Length: 589
Image 1: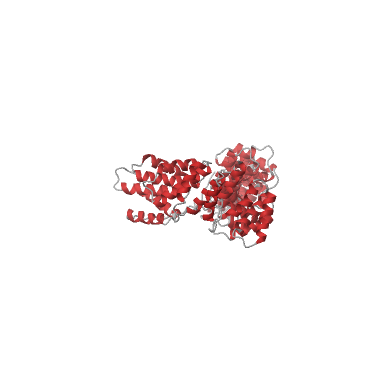
Image 2: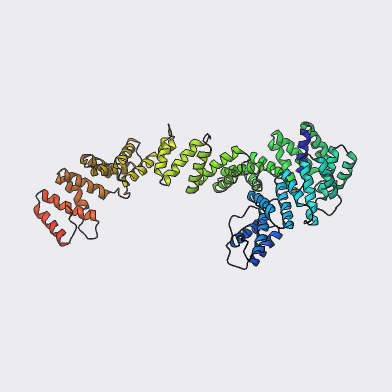
C-alpha cells in the first residue's frame, strides 16, 4: 500500500492543479478622499482580473475608510468590501483569511454569498492540501449559487480531495461526471484520475478507455507508457527503473521523452547523484511550460550542489511564496546562496521568510538566528536587538546561544544599554574573546552613568576595573574620571596621579573628559595642597580673562592670580586682580 501511495504522489505532480501567487505587496498605496464607489470599482476590477495581490491592499484600505457599522449609509458597500477582501486573502494564502472566511460564513445573512465564500474557502483548503476541510466546504457551497464553471471545478476538486484521502469510491463518480464535459478545464485530468482509479481497482478496460483520451495531450501524452517505468520505481526496483528509462530514451523519438527524463533525473536525485541528475531535471524544467514545485526545487537543489549558485537562486526565488516545508527549504537554501555570493541584504530577507515558516523547526531556528545576525551586521540595530533577545529567550539550548549573546552584548553596547550589557556579560563564566573586546566599553559606559547619577563609589569601582584590563580606547578616559572622582572626594594625590596619566595619553577630548578640565582639576589639587607654584603651572596655561572665555577658563585666570599672590609676586597678582575687577569677571572663592 505504501508503494501505491508513493505512486499517487508522483502522478499528482504531473497534473496542473495549483496556481502560484505573487508576493504580497507590502507597500500600501496612499489613498485620497474619493468616491467610495470609484475606489471599490477599481479594486473590484483588479479582483476580476485575478490580480489579487494588487486588489487586496485596496480593499483593506476601503475597510479602514468604511468600517463595519450597521447604521452606516454604506452598509451594502461594506458587505461587498468584506466579501472581496476575504476572498483576496484566501487567494493570497493569508492564514488570517481562513478564520475571517469562517466567521463570514457563520454570520452573513446572504445565502448566495455564504455559499460562494464556502466555495472560495474550500479552494483555499484545497490549495493547502487540507482535503478534509476542503470537502466540508465544497459540500456547504452546494451548486445553486455557483456558475457552471465553478460547479465543475468544485466537483473535480472535491473528487481530487476524496482521491487524496483514499476515498476512491467517492471520487470515481465525480471524475466520471467531469469526463462528460469536453470543454471544461478539468476534462483531461478527470479522465486521467478516473483511469488511474480504474487501474487501481483493476478495472483495466475502463482505465484503458480513459487513458486513451489523454494519450496525445501535451500534459499526458507520455504518461501511459511512463507508467511502465513508474511501476518499477514504486515497487522499489529502482535500478530496473533506471535501466528501462535509459533504454526508452536511447530509442529516441518518444512522445514522453521529457517526462521520462524527469523520472530518470528523479531516480538519480534520490540516489544522491545530483551531478548526474542535473541534466535530466534541467531538461525537464526548461522544456516544460509548467512544472511542479517539487521539480523546480529539485533542479534548483542540483544547481546548488553543483555550485551553480546564480541558477539556484533563480529557481529558489520562484518558490518563495510557498508556505510549506518545500518553501521553507527553498528559502533556507536561497539565503545560503545569497550569503555565498555576498548578497547579505537578500540573504536577510530570505532568512526572514524562512523564519516565519515552522515546517522545519531546525531550519526555522537557524533562520531566526541568521536574520537577527544579518540585521546586526547591516545596521538594523533595533530589529537586531529585538530579534536576538527573542532568539535567546526562545532557544535557550541552541548551539547558537553563545554567538547570539556575543552579538547581543555588542548591540546593547552600541545602543547604550550598558546596564543590560554588563548583566549579560557577567552571566558568562568564561566570556568569549569577542565579549572581552567590548567589555571595557561596557564598563566605561555604565560607570559614566553612575557618575551622572552621583553614584561615585560604584563608578569608581568600574573605572578601576577598566584600568586592570589591557589597554583600550577607553583607558585614558577611565584615568580622567578616576582623577575627577578623587578630586571630588578630596583625594588630591590620587587625583593628580590619574589626571596626569590622562594628560600623557594625548587622547582626544570626549565631553567632560578634556585637557582643560584635567589641568584645572590638577591645579586645584595642588592649590589645596598649598603648593602654589605647581598649581600655577596648570592654571596659567588655561586661564583666560576674556568675556568670551568659559567660566572655567575665567576662574583659572583668577586662580592664577591667587597663585602669584601666594608666591608673593604681588605686582603680578594686583595687575590681574585689577583686570578681573575692572572687567567684572566672576570671583569665586
